[in-house]
Each structure stands twice: as structure tokens, then as C-alpha cells.
Length: 438
Length: 79
Image (cartoon, rainbow over all chains, first blue to last red; front, side, top):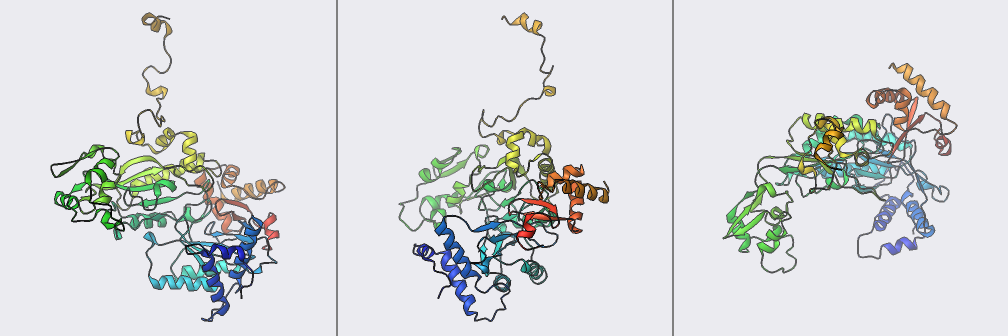
């Protein structure tokens, strides 16, 4: 028998999709039975009270959570987000229900043993409810009391070799795609650089001194599986400089229907025979391809590495050999408004350990500028808009490049300065009038 | 700047403003100390370690306050 009546939540379970309400109910039931004899360190009925407060919020049409606070683990300014219920008498099990962010492993590779261990830890010291994973990529532990924060942190660090992630005005937990571990398109080892920068910038991750949040994300290729270009302040997208590698025999095999296009991903329906002209050539955004007399040709200088042709014919086409990444700055995806895509700052850079060039010529100059000039709660992308892309080029020392401009006459952020113009901006009007009438 | 001097400036500066607010952005503290962010960060971190200051976080934004001050410490029964 449920502790609270939840007719509105029950309705959410009637849809065709798996419901988080069902998940919470299942955990509530499991905690009530406690078949594994867990020594619960927070109220056993916290999940019942969580359902109760959520039901009340639906009924009232407003939240009953307060967020933020001075809770945290000693010395860390992030990783814990204070949550308090504003109806503690009615729902004592969730009076304090703090969130903990746990740094996810690069590429989100787990062993089942590790997953069991973190779940057991959270069952005992928290609500047992997790988000796998939050938007930034962390493992999210949902709901515990203040005294359990240090205990959980100690166990994570000492028994599971695990650290808290970032929150607040910190570097957020860097996140990456599976990379070269499982994907042959990955143009650099995303996991290696993600791990290296996480270790290198521990201080920025745990001790907040930025104007606001800052995110790194690493995509191995322009398919952008972690959407770094849309939601990270500094986005690393794998790319290559030379020609796409073409296996003409395999192209013919696709045309002849021997290989299914898109690796068979759309095989659930009969789309008719594969039409290379319609499905590849005509969809190339720069029109840099042609297929004539059974031969596929790509004009590399025109190619923007959109990945479409490679995605459709993975056996026939592969990224080139001269691989590295492009770096884009200033993306953000806030919930309310102001979403912005990243702007290209470094067209191509090699991604090689120990990544000194990336750290010293890109990351650190950008941080120095943003830390000094950024207003409180201003993301890098907003500072770039306020002071101009030209300023970003100045602080990083990168030269303006046509690839930073979407098309001529747009993004007009590259201006001449007086000392760059011969004779400056002043002119001799009399000399001018000799040649030009009024 | 010496740590003790910075600490004195911060405690004085924040105590003076306590009537109107108890939580401050990092930039406010850097301004009080009068150092660039990277230098200020080292000093402020030491003040956190010595429990002169404490962090406050909304989840998305972090702020700093003198330890034990402000409404929340009382209202959340954590002082």
C-alpha cells in the first residue's frame, strides 16, 4: 500500500513509454521490503515521500523544492547540489534531498561490478535513485541527507576510486564520445584527451573561480555524438585535412545493392533500390561530389566534412589519414532561452599527448580572458558576443581565417584597426579634394 | 599579496556588507583583494581550507560567504 495517494502521477504511467514514476514506485517498494537487509542511512520511505511531493507539485502547479545551499564536501565547491523540500512536515523523508554528481568514466565505459558497487553504495547512503546520466554526462545520485555527503564521498574516493563531478561556477565534468575504442571514424583519441584534461584541471573542476559554468566536450568526428558543437563552451570536433579515402569497388557494391546503405540502419522499411545520385551526391551540402561512369570523385577543398556520404556508405568511404580536431568556442544550451552554437576558433590542430599546444594556446588564454572580463553568470559565448569575436582572436593570437565566417558578408567581426592601415584613419582633406569634387 | 593581508581585507570587506548581503561572487572577492583572478583564487582557496569562507552553490552558480553567516545557515538548521 503506497504511503501517499498519487492519482496524477499514476496517469503518467499510462502512456506508451517507460515511466520514471514506475521506477520510483519500484524503488519505494524495494526499500519497504528490504529483502537484502540494507542498513539504510536515510529515511527508508524517502521514495514514497518523493512521489508525495511530486504529486502535490502537480496538484498545485508549482514546485515544492528549494535548491542551492552551503552543503558540500570539505574543500570542494562543486559536485553537490543542495535540495530542500518546503513541506518537510508532510514529507519528512525528503526534507533534505541533495543531489551528488559523480564523474563518469571517459566514454561511459563501465564494468557490471562497478555499476553494482555504486548502486549498492547509493542504496545504503542515498535514495537508491540515479540518473544515468545527467545532461553534462555525470552519474547523478538523487537524494540524500547532509550527514551522508562526506560519508558517500569518502566511500567513492577510497573504495571505488571515484571522484565527484563539477557543478556551479566550475569546469564541469568533461565528456566525450566512445571514440577510438569502438568507432573507426574517430579522428583522435577522445577518451585520452578527456581524461588528461580532467586530471590536469582538477583545481578548476572542484574550486569555483569562473564567472559561470564552463564545459569541454570531445567528439571524435563531425557526427558529433555528444553534441559538443551545440552545448559546450569549448568543443573539440575530430576532422581531417586530406582526402576522404574512397574504395571504388565498395562504392560499386553499394550502387549494385550488395551492401545495405547506412549500415542497414534504416532496413525496417523498403525504401527501394539505393540511388547514389539522390541519396548521396544531391545531398552533399557543398556539391563537391560526382558519380560518373561508375567512379565517385570528391573535390576535397570544397568538402566541409559533414559526414553524410561516409555515414551512408561506411564501407566505401573513410575519413582521411591526416587527422586532428577543430575547436569551436562559445556554445551554450540554456533551458530558458539564448541557445547558441559554437564558433570556429581553431580550424585544425593535431591532438597529440601531452596536448600542450591545446592547453597553452587555446584553453588557458581563453580562461584568462573570460575570468578577467566575464561578468557574473556570463558564459563564454555571451562574452564573445559582447566584446566581439575579434577580441577572442586577439587574446588567443589566432589569425582570422575564412573558415571562421559562414559566408561572405556575414559574421562581420573582423575589422581593421588604425595602426594596421597605412596613414591611419586621418586624411588630408585638401589632398583628397584635388582628385574628388564635392 | 600576503595571505594574512588578503584575509584581513576579505573579512573586513565582507563584514561591512553583511547587512545587505551575505553571499558574494568570486569576482567581488578578487576586487576586494585587488589581484588578478588566478592569484586571488589561490588566496581564496586557502581561506576556504581554513574555514574563514564557505562555498554556497545554487547548482549552476557558486558564491562565497563568511562561514556561518546568512539566512540559510539558520533556516536550514545547519549552523
